[in-house]
Image 1 (cartoon, rainbow, N blue to C red):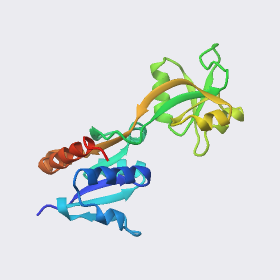
Image 2 (spheres, rainbow, N blue to C red):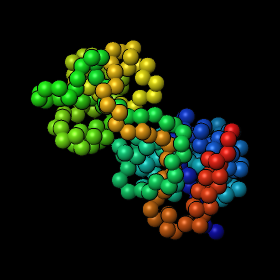
Image 3 (cartoon, helix red, strand yellow):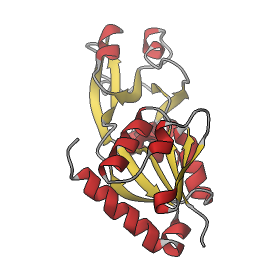
Length: 213
């Protein structure tokens, strides 16, 4: 018998929403509700295992082939992925990338060199290359909203859900960059070698997406 199909799930909110989707698809997810400190959980009904990991690690595990499938946000895919396939937009975890600046400022005015602070340098560089703008990008690990307030950057590129944090810190959205949501991704080799199993799981998840809570 083949080894279990390994499904890497992003820990936290996406994990909970993925489990809810799997249950709507009729899968037995009791092991994921009673996991304790375990990070690899059996899904014997479909001869699979769920692997709980941080978002960027989901990409690493799927691309390397130690996991066959993963659920991860589009933001993480855009920033970290290089060789995997997206199979489904799962529709949850929705938010947007935005360019934000101090309230009332026009980032695109004038000809001076601009600096952007972000946790997502690859996404930021790609956006400004498409705008034919040469900007400096500074990677920030913590609260990126601080950078314009301290004079380190002219603007930030970050994920925006409600915009409340921006408003409370005197910032506003200058441009929306792209929408993001949770995606089902697959290892390229696994898609060929385990095509039947993967297509069967995808079909069930699609059924789950069409069902209400």
